[in-house]
Amino acid sequence: MTDINRDRLLEDLRALSTIGAQPDGGVDRLAWSDADLAGRRWYAERIREAGLEPRVDAALNVFGHLPGSGGPWLLTGSHLDSVPDGGRLDGAYGAVAALEVLRTLFESGDSVAERIEIVGFADEEGVRFKAGLIGSLALVGELEVGRLRSGQDWKGVPVSQVLASAGLDIDRLTEAKQHLHSIRAFIELHIEQGPRMEADGIDLAIVSGIVGVHRQRIQVIGTQNHAGTTPFRLRHDAGRAATRAASELKDLVLAADSEAVANIGMMHFEPGGVNVIPGRAEFTLEVRHLEERVVRQAVDAFRTRLEAICAEEGCRAEVELLSWVPPAPMDPLLMETLGKACRELGRTPGKLWSGAGHDAAVLSHHVPAGMLFVPSAGGISHSPRETTSDEHLVLGTQALLRAVRHAAASIK
Ligand SMILES: [Zn+2]
Image (cartoon, rainbow, N blue to C red):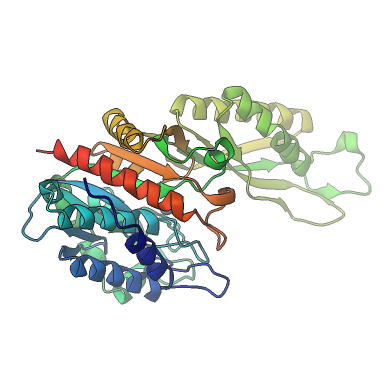
């Protein structure tokens, strides 16, 4: 079996990283920006250049397949947008590797190439509209267009206007789902974006699932008062109650499961004064785990403890759910196929869950989905310092080639 062209893969990754390149070495292809659109044109052009057929759907997802092939297909790829001042590999790696895989199979005359389609998804990151995975949600018919229509981007520009200037009609976004029926499975290759693989010396990791994410906003209400004249025993200090609960979060979450993670990323006190006892404290809580049961357990444990502390402090708490994204287990058969591909390369793959969201999570609720990770140097991502060694970038693509070939062969 012919293998991927290592130099061509690395050169394409380098070329794409020049689109939206920043002086600090990072990449800025914020969704729907000029750089993002240029990246999509570049991807479609590479597809055409390879003798394949590009197609851009109503959500600006860029697809490619063999000329004249009508599916059904095994889909592989990732997203082409980046976070502001992000890295060159998040998303771009999976999209470019998919292109290299299909090109390789097409050039070698492998008939399985007819059953493979590649994709560069639109707006996975979700920074612009505070809601991500737009391209993949549109593909599976789960995009909430009504919410987008009334929304604004991060600079206050109406979403419909942003989309219109990118050449998109917001009323036609849902047309992207017409393509879903011809997709039988999805495989996404991605950088880990975390430190676990490097720490454990793992070159390739099969993703067992993508975590569920629970987000809530909590308000602790006490009594605003003079900080000089009110003794501790007579205070109803909302700030103290909130920070006491926050300081116990880690232990409560680890008691639910040693792999669960949580974060309090924002907290502020009202009215906010050096000599004013906070009358109100507001903070966000995020909890992530692969099992919904564990997330619920951690959230409930924190709530119970918060209420006990509030009672001791003479305060009360109000909790508002912000969002819940359920966990997305990956398909066991595709996990086996990915494992086989790694072993064919003489590697024993690790197994990891993903703490970050991915297009594969969206697809997994409709078709079997699988993901493969390569290590991120230093565990750094969403940063100009995001990088992965050439050796790992090549190895991941070689594994993707084998996995895609096996998986596509069984598509009917
Ligand atoms: Zn990504």
